[in-house]
Image 1: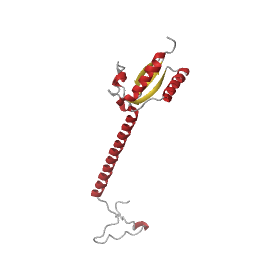
Image 2 (image 1 turned 120 degrees about the vertical axis):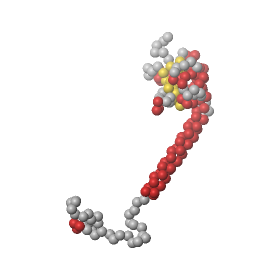
Image 3 (image 1 turned 180 degrees about the vertical axis):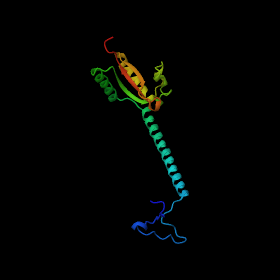
Image 4 (image 1 turned 135 degrees about the horizontal axis):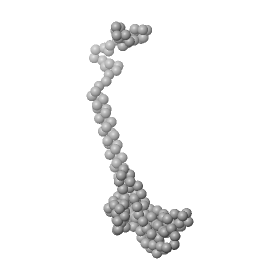
Length: 175
């Protein structure tokens, strides 16, 4: 656009459509924008987003509590025991030196998994009830046969202790 020519927002110059007449006194213009309305809409979106985040966190807490309750109430059936022995046999035949029996969040442990992570004695005492059934199974059925038991932290989401795995272990060759 040439600075010497006046601007014509309606586009009447150059063959465009003529400009629309101004809105009548007291009527609302066709197009308008209000900062107050924009701030209010943004505040409402943020409020809804925060409410959704709080609700999602509440549902996640309920879900975790339900999972923990089911884990803590866990018992082992004869079918579970047969399945674990089959897993040990399959891992052994596959040339592995261990097999994981169970995993669970480290915060189920009484110390949050710290003894397991640091390989400190007494880590077994920090296990939740749902994991103790596996410890008892190992103690009664596998330990007498020469199998070991180990535990380790499996992951570190966000740099914090994540899942704990309980493993049945065995040496590479006959001792």
